[in-house]
Image 1 (tube, rainbow, N blue to C red):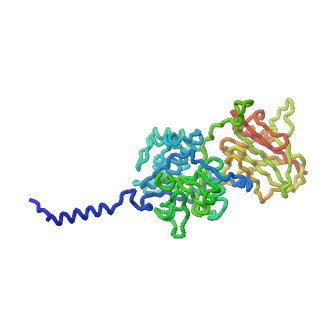
Image 2 (cartoon, helix red, strand yellow):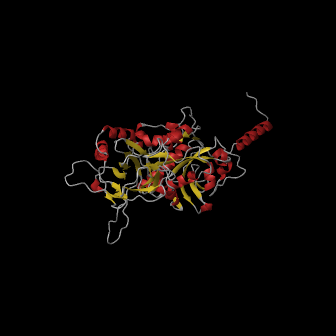
Image 3 (cartoon, rainbow, N blue to C red):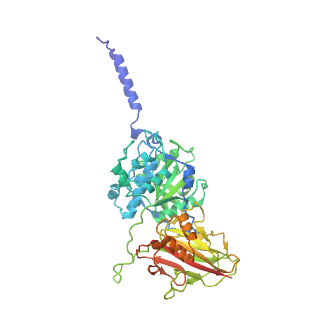
Length: 499
């Protein structure tokens, strides 16, 4: 017969077990630093390899509105729980759902919650294979590339859990929801107080795009309310490694002296219902990476509906303009070139011509504006017929610009110089709804003979929008395309005579 413990000893053991049990706090009672997980792995080389968004002119930044918000397109803030899945939550659960809401015009929180995209689908495919417990982080670049190439399915296809199974049904459904493109907004060596860090994020938000960010998390951040300000007592990054992925969904120059609105993945119980305001200075100090992703453009809705115009006017599919200036800022006006002669057989796109010839050696710059989201490419050629790419002007610069953007070539502080051979140089701008294979395009143009118009026609063919659909201004280099056609690329030719 087993020996029985004395009653006193049995009571003591029971008391000890109860004390140990109470010492292990429930998840909601644990300190915030232990309760909230992070999970962003920063691969600097991979981040630098992503095409960067072209810097726009100072005037473009100066024209930004005082506030912008995408919060009406946000689902209920998600909860990553104890797993290191913040990257997947930022990119799939939050950013992709926001882009879907924008595309479909959905602002109902319930409807948005019914269309949330799966973070587990992303995390399980980009995580370290050794992370069986889902406690290792993942790369934002890998997450966005997965969404671009493979898409992501709704949450119902791959519910959130560690070790979720990715079946062929989920993979097939994901292909219906890819992103179009993505780009970085600044390089990792940007200084904390570099104004471009904040301006580029604000510009993206004003364009209607959420921004996924990498952020250094300090101890006080875990206890944020409506506003988080970095404290002097914050001793640096805390948590797993101090790096956290979140989504910026708005900004307001008048809020707390100027602040950004950030959507976190620590549930609606954290911060201001899952969101937080961060003052501009604290944001710039702690944001070390930022990426803009593009979804499908929302369906165009008519504006200017009146009794006299009951159907309204559709906004353009593509629209933009080009202007030239001498080194001192003097405008170099242009006008529409003569139309094609009756019976003219030679392929020629009706373009523009500077109103007068300029002396060889004239220093100048030009500005390219796009009113709509577009991929921009530019080429120059002279009497020799050699084609030179001038936009994008750097190998790792993205050709994609958001609406209401102006860039300067070569820059607002630099100029180019006309060569010393009298004659006519040609600038060819391509405004495109889709990304082009630039090396293949240049190779195709150089392989053909004839005028620049003929070269581009032979290279792109039916992808070019017919001239008759394009509205062109007669006295300045400006165009718009409103009607949907089979083409998606508008060539804009400018003749630059010099003597």
